[in-house]
Image (cartoon, rainbow, N blue to C red; front, side, top):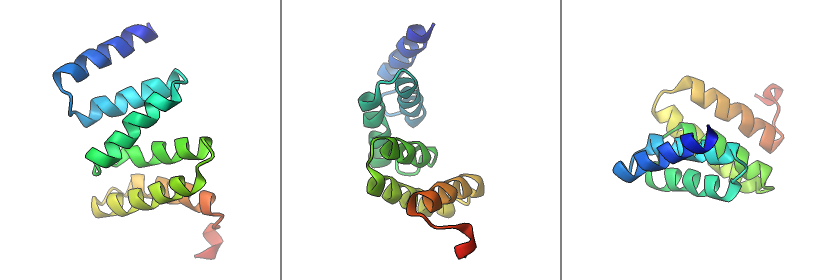
Length: 111
């Protein structure tokens, strides 16, 4: 079943190679399959080529953290907060802000 889902997503991407939702779905699927480097490539493609796709920043930041790339995670969260604030996506902004505070060691009591 898993291979089938991945195969379908890859087929869809052939027809719509610039679709950010498909890239996001593939990144998520590869991450679920522990294909971290492939997932990372799709997430990085999204922030570089579809910077307004706000959902990417949380997951890319968490992946950077899991890979021990803390400063890149923090930078990703900061960029994501800026973009989601501009988009007035308060839910995504608050999620990014929470992981940013944890990553930087800030406490909500600091505000």
